[in-house]
Length: 161
Image 1 (cartoon, rainbow, N blue to C red):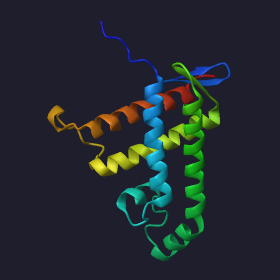
Image 2 (cartoon, helix red, strand yellow):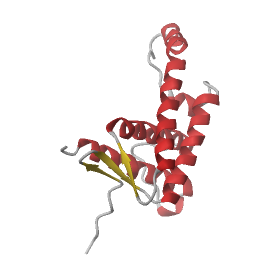
Image 3 (cartoon, rainbow, N blue to C red):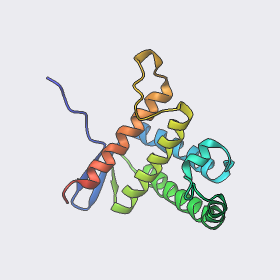
């Protein structure tokens, strides 16, 4: 008999619960710390950093440059604030269950998606990719783990409240 994988996030009466042990929370927090450094210190022309800040105006380079000039600092601030809130919650948890409110769940989804974008760019992942087992690296495993976490967050957010 197949067992269903445990859900990483569940809805509670007061919000949501994140189900990760201390080692998992520490690993995710470290990864998000690296993402934060990339967001704040990465070179805008680096394809990995550029993936975190998608182009708004493909058809007009001047308008795109103006958009980036006006919005970049706000986007960096928004991303780093979300990462900081999630890392704070991950660090404050004890046991296997960490309480999240709706805003922090949104921050977690944003941060996980950012980390997935970075890894996906590094691994050159495409939607139609289906690597064989011998092609899978530890980084692919991390990418799949983050995908599983993000999927669990989205499922919990969409569950009836």
